Length: 422
Ligand SMILES: *Cc1c(COP(=O)(O)O)cnc(C)c1O
Image 1 (tube, rainbow, N blue to C red):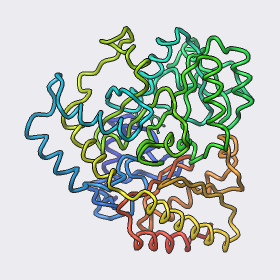
Image 2: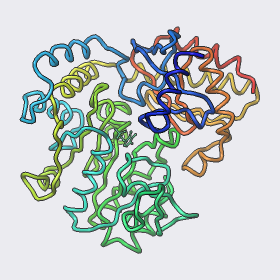
Image 3: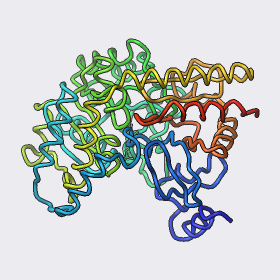
């Protein structure tokens, strides 16, 4: 038995499902997880000593690669000076300035400890500011695991929300209005029916939690206009796309300024950080300057801030365009490989993110994504992992490429893909 297997068996008796976050269990690709012992640059090494080219990147944060020397040095320095005070520290101001410089549409930012906290707090703020309760979210978009966001759609355009998980009361998601991604008409219908009750529209400006699904031209613009017309707040959940779609996130890339932005993943450089940001007129409603309560014992702690600051400093010097060209090249080669096998695939791509959907495109929403073969993805996942390529263990995830993936890494990835037959 491999060491990973032994650890997983032991973990399964004392941690629910053996994991501290569900997708890691690898259930949907029908295998056991690898326990990771070490990460360095573009690679992770498992508990059995095998090394893999990593396209998960901790689900996004590690855009500079694992154990980046500048980030590690910043952490070493910070850790010796104490890890949390529950009092303000200079690093919070430094990171806030770096975030606001990257995203010029935002005036103020509040640090929290995860993406979940960021979206949950942004929703409370939007409701507090507008004094309305309902909000719109899109099927297949993930905004963390706060109760209000865990609603699944019924069939078609559901205005009646049902909880997506036991433990969430019906009344908690009763104010969650659902629409298919990229379906502006559906959102218009929701506004026509509930306009004066809608506090906010939450959207991943490029959806990366149903596989990568790009916004159609006019979709985000349409949401912006609807929110303006109805006095609702447009919230971009940039937990994945922030500092990845571009340094200034999807909002910079697509040229649309939301009212509030949520961040996570990259902003913490591999430590637990989230943030929500927005225009002063809204952010000033947050306690203690306003009445909307939100707090955190470890929020803004110097260790997390140090990793975030070092990461953003490096990203300010990084060549996003060059990385995007490399990923474009990789995706084109992958398309060629699958075409030569007569295997229908649709590869979606944005900046350093891509998804291989095993099915005919185009993929515009969760319904389209679900039509693709998750079983073939599972076989592909296992095939690639056996050859040292570590992909996300679910068909509905996005492959992440870092600034330190090399041409040689891409070559090895392509060689591995070329021998996939099933
Ligand atoms: C990961 C993610 C979240 C949740 O962040 P956590 O840090 O896992 O709580 C929220 N929104 C989006 C778009 C995400 O990808």
